[in-house]
Length: 632
Image (cartoon, rainbow, N blue to C red):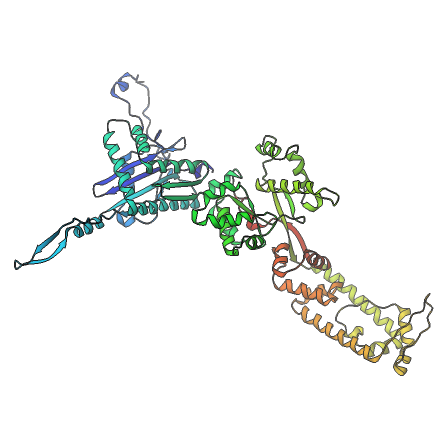
């Protein structure tokens, strides 16, 4: 699969009024045709009279790939194929022949306009009656003729036929950019006309020489051939290229399927996957650089270098993108674009800012075999430390806070943070986030409901035995009959104390000192105004609880009522708010909920613990970020 990313060859075809011609191709060492034996070689071979003539197998597809390079196509054939008609220019051109796929973007480029000189003369056109018409500059007619002359330039990339659509799309984009760059340089200084003339002249001078020698001489003489050769090598090695045409125009390009393999071998990252990850970018995310600062300028044009350095000065893997944007005095949209560009070019990756609550575990595809080059690289970076010993702490999901203690020296904590960042850069660890799913259990509902009915029946029996208690409950606004939510049932001894003093409270409306058999006496001050205020508050809270619970259906409402925390208006209001926002559908992790709802982690964890009977909590990786490195 990795070999399908590399190009087989790059071919330059030129076409103008004089005809078409293949001017340059690379590589050319093994690109020749099948060797044809001479007449003497044929006679010297011994012929077996019993040999059977081997006919071609029609079911076997002939191959045009040998040792990762193109073969079996003559220059005349390739030139005729890629010197397309004007109707096919300025659009994608794709041709599949057996096991080879050719991709390009043919571009029509007008010749550089010749400006008339100051000494140019004027010619007069005679009219039909013999009079002389207005003089017309001779140079203007020449310019009109030159404007009509156009040349076709087609830079073709030969790929494996099995190359994916995204890879083919990237090579087409590169061919298109090269055509536009050559068109710009042609209009500016006639660069393409000059280079094609040098190549054609070299072909004419070296007709008696082998073709490989001619192409080598063209690469030595022409800067355009040198640029195409450099582009081919960059695509095969790193997938990152930065080529300057005519010492003026710099062309930058990235092949993500190749570039991201530098940091994780075997990882096939498509541009569509990167775009999907970057669309999920949020202000609470962070950035982790994968290369040194000096390598960042290779992927950014000079116009964006200043903004990049502003971001690099504020770079810190411990803070969010929003904080970096504030420190760098940049808008969050500009930070998004810079970070997206660095991620596309495999210079950075998206993480959650490093903190003690982050939970990490060993990545399932981490290259941790004994002969891994990362073992020695880790020992070189952190002297006296073993990669296997350090990473063994993350065999199970573990937070950084669990690996540190208050008595630990700050220097040791800093080294641990650096080691975690190093392992994240090499994709040895992956972060787990906590997701929440609202899922009440129906079986538990039935058991709880039956218990609630039994409790309510027992309270009714107790009420039948004591008529004074019924009188008290009928006159109270907090009676069990008017309460939609279960409340704690007071003890029998306490009920009797209250019933004995009920008549004195109603008649005298004064403070009383009831006698009881308790170890210590207590005093209770009550007034009608205080009772009324408490009753009104209770009614308001009860009404709010009813309104909040209307969001749920009957089964969910019954399950929530049995939770003690549902009696708290604030807790229930927060639960309903998060439920209505869709945070309990396993689509948003805690960090996202904390950011968008402005909640503290402790506040959110307490709420989840109080309503743990109807909420399921689990840990997994962020799918948007993990999708970049899980494709092989």
